[in-house]
Each structure stands twice: as C-alpha cells, then as structure tokens.
Length: 85
Image (tube, rainbow, N blue to C red; front, top):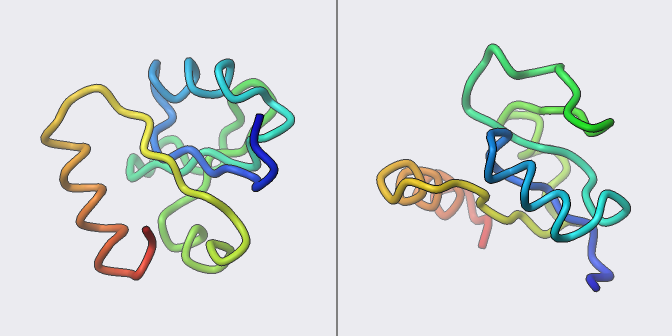
C-alpha cells in the first residue's frame, strides 16, 4: 500500500486502527506527546517521544492518528513548526 515507512502520531485507539489499516509492515513507530507512553510497545511497535521523532523524520512519513480536532490541530502546528509536513 505504501512504500515509505510511516510514523503514526497518536498511540491511542485511532493509532491502533491506523496500524491495522496501513499494515504493521509499513509502520516504524508510534509517536505520542503523552510521556507515560514513551518506551512502551503497541502491537510490537515502540512509542517514541516527539524529540526522538525529530532525529529520524527525514526518511519517513508522519501521519496524525487522532480523533479530536483540538489535539489534531495542536499536533499539526507542532509538526509544522519543526518543518514536518
């Protein structure tokens, strides 16, 4: 489905649904702003911090996987402010 590896931003229910949609083989990591999630694994995929994302973002596509518009807009701004489309 997708040749560029994906980092899903959001490790909640929608992130898990996105993992199934895109396929585990296409997902490299989850990223989440919730520090209690960092270092955990969801269905074999590590949850990384935003700072970790900044170190590896050039080679991957970042997809926001959230339900509520307010957090989505905040994450969108967070990504844009760091040059991540």
